[in-house]
Image (cartoon, rainbow, N blue to C red; front, side, top):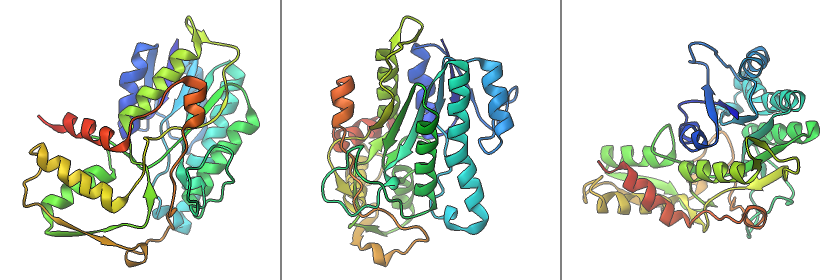
Amino acid sequence: MKILLLGREGQLAWELRRTLACLGEVVALDRRSETLMVDMADPDTLVKAVKAVNPGLIVNATAYTAVDRAEQEAEQEQARKINAEAPGILAELALKTGAAQIHYSTDYVFYGDGTAPYDEEHATGPQGVYGSTKLAGEQAIREVGGRYYIFRTAWVYGARGQNFLLTMLRLMRERERLGIVSDQIGAPTWSRLIAEATALVVARSMNGGSFKADVKSGVYHLSCAGQTSWFDFATAIRDVAVNNNILPPECASIEAIATGDYPTPARRPAYSVLSNEKLAREFGMRLPDWKDALELCMASLVR
């Protein structure tokens, strides 16, 4: 089976290139691809890529993720094209060619005023452009139908790309003190675990070299277990980094601050923990606790 992976160097796409390679021939494309360039904001490049690769599975590991920049009027159209329109175009191409589709969404589709983990049926209510366009992308896929998995995840980090973990490690080397928000609650999720879980779902959905006819299409939450605040996550990063000699013991101290003390153009969900019960029920898998995942990720950084 050929797998068209949209994205090459992002933190999730990089991991997917490794995990999906066991299941078929992975063709990873992005705007920097030399032979077949893909621009998620340009529908023609999507059509050309699907036609050229003729995949049995399309995996979209790209997104417009500049949450604050998306609030700018000049950027909103770009966010809409990439997050809302491209997924629907890919769904139509998948349906036409008989391919299955995997798409990744976000906890930002929820308003964030809950007190218990959100399941897949909970009412959505995004607060900003990023969440609204990601929700529109989900809806576009569902309207087209076919065979698809939409994986909502949250607080994604990894050893590559731009993410909270790498930003904290850099700032802890550069500064003496950091103020980190302590009243936003979520579940940090290692990109490698998302990629490994994706590969397991694909493997369990296949019969030989093609997808089963009874693929359980739908939305699934896919995040690490447990919950924490950004402040406690940053504190854990520092502690694990010091224990692994990644940072010196005298690195930056961390101070808890409120969301109001660090205003941003886009509002963040105050609570965005996802329930993964559906994933466990349908596919028999659970991601580990976020603390255990962080230990594993940090161990991979040790040279």
